[in-house]
Length: 262
Image (cartoon, rainbow, N blue to C red):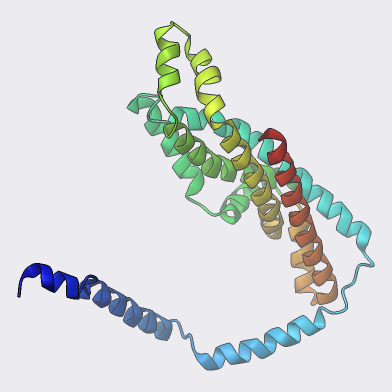
């Protein structure tokens, strides 16, 4: 029998190496679960505890709505300020990190800066800034600025590296200065993506601002953590619902902004 006939009978050959890899991954997952004391009985008990916890959150308590509104406004202010400064700083960092625009001795420091900003979770940055500048919104703003540079700077650099170089070459051949090349050849190709990145980062900062507040960096996170420590679960539910509504409102506004610039 010829090789062509064998290939027709088995068009999709079995890759035993891939199956072996999946099997080893499954075995390791089971071993790691055993080492971490993950068990079905604990999961079942957790479901019961979770049901009791959810039951204590109903009905929600909105009697302290003034405190809730004040903290939500502070959270929004932290997110907007951090997003504005973070995006403004991310643009030059992203330009310097783009390999198709800058030489290697410029891109490496910029990429190192982006990597440092991405190395730690925002909560770690929040702890460091709370220690440096004290409790309050300033620590949260600085935390989210660094987080924004790490995320948006990387996306900006990757978007710039994907642009067409023909407009750049045409402007350079005409003797245009560097800033004119950036304004008229680079930014028009990536402006819509920049707007999308910026709106997404605003959403992320709204969520992160509630998280960094747990360690004292301002926002509604501190109130949420205090309610949890006091077993004030009905007020905790009101805070969670308010955060969800805030994020949904931010998503709606970002979608409207994207339509305007499309």
